[in-house]
Image (cartoon, rainbow over all chains, first blue to last red; front, side):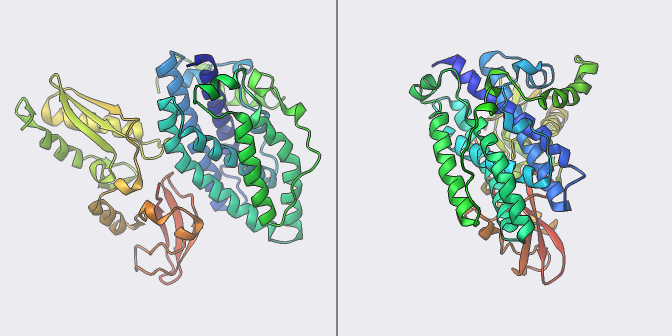
Length: 252
Length: 164
């Protein structure tokens, strides 16, 4: 088994979950309606739980540092999250569409991982898949509602989709050794994942009467997996790690 | 009967019945279905448990409660291990547990075999008046494991333990 490729996969999944979890927790207290405030807060809590479980796998099976240290005491360059999760929450339309695109991808990723030859990941995937299903149901319900709302809501969802779609392709930036992951039956690879995701998104988008974005160029959104981030990540980390940094040895 | 220091495994299970879910204080951890194994290992009690939702913030607290409870009543050193191989599912909540949830005002989860979709949530019976004329308000609620509904007959908001 190729440990480097496997560790890379687990770390990027954990970092995506942690950063989107922290990002979306910014909706706590300011959601457009109370139910959405609660939904985004709950989904953030789920995501941070997923990140915690993944960091724990790295800690228990590969001797990496414990989850708290990995999350709160690591410099920007060592994070491997994708650009999609780094962007500020923006308006609710963007946050909703990002959540739709990302959780669809997460659902397919964990679904694929339920067959992983690496048992700790397979066990976790079986559990997390059921939780992500609720995230997907939530996203679909609201996108459908807004796409079939009035002219303004439909236009806003479409425009958010056009903006977020190329950005979402950063989720599928390949790792350094996809071939190893595939041949070891750890994970079927980013290309297969992207294909499943695209087909699913297309079906939904057409069902809701929206249009698939065209002329997509995602080149400038790549690099996150190698530690090259947007200008939005550093301030997020500074805030997220602020308390830990005051006293890294404190017991909670 | 397996026992250590005259304490049986049955006694340990009885003690675990007294440890409640901190978010649903009428429900014991045994009824919740999170205890996956109890054993004596070299004069120690080893309890295995599996979390409900991955991000459940009550997990640490439950582990501590088990340890304190068992050690206090048996005098045996107790270890609580997270079981990652046995997956929890809402189907593991016992029938008595489901009855207690309902009496506490939380609609119990439907069997997973009923499917998990927006459609399957639609007719969640109201725990107060049993009416099926209810509306799903949100699949997220006051804790990770609960959804919010509204009963159109008795005009009450109520929560449901989500099937997982």
